[in-house]
Length: 79
Image (cartoon, rainbow, N blue to C red; front, side):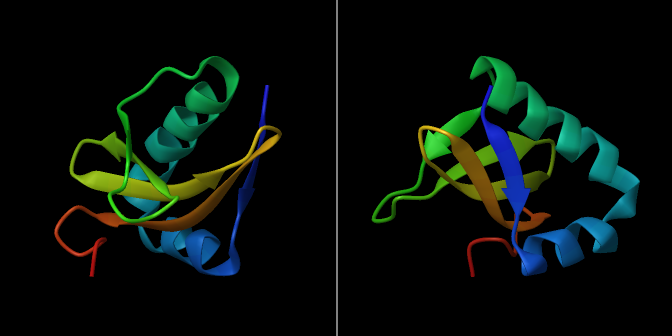
């Protein structure tokens, strides 16, 4: 299992979207444990995105760790 770390801005985003925070954390944890989930490599970047409904989680992945960098609704996350 990979460890999951949140950047300061990602933790702020998670507090901002409290209504879906539990679902997002569960999806991230599930991906860290099993590798299962709707994950896609972002074009032109080393980052990946995890989809949960209308929300997206942008993260960097190393062999030991997942570093969540951004969380937000799908319309604004890629700006």
